[in-house]
Length: 214
Ligand code: E4P
Image (cartoon, rainbow, N blue to C red):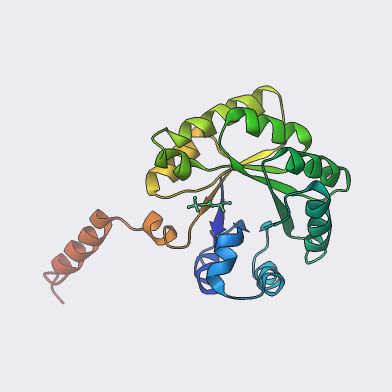
């Protein structure tokens, strides 16, 4: 399973990248806004740090606007993947961009039908938002399971990015469901490698070590 970091924060990216755990990055307009930096500048800096796909999202809602932005964003780095919202205009753009060899990540996927449409239109990646589905009282990870079954059955090459990951269970369940990728917020990542019993275990070992004759 690949891990993407769902952040545009350079310090968070460097910290996790040094552990060899980062296969790519996803951003969205909210994530970019948090950094208070120029969009192009921050995406280019991330592409220089990470050896893998870096998703950068278009703002336009009409196909022609999306295409214009996507073609420009795609020039920033060979790593760049253009994030396109899941709409009819978005599907039209994805279809065209896939013909042009520009990689896409179709975002804001909330149903299996949407995921199937995006894959058929030629999306490189689809992003089901599990946390936001949980927020409205439905089980988000069930969508990842459905999409995995569908894409495997019909042999689509589109990869599933489990997005809107909020906790350790989301990540573990996405792995069990066979998601190709999980995109994880920088704040959650350290929680994935820590466990209270590990900390207690280390303390106990060190305390017992004091009793070893020196
Ligand atoms: C991923 O591509 C999305 O940008 C992100 O996972 C959304 O997460 P949120 O629902 O926590 O904002």
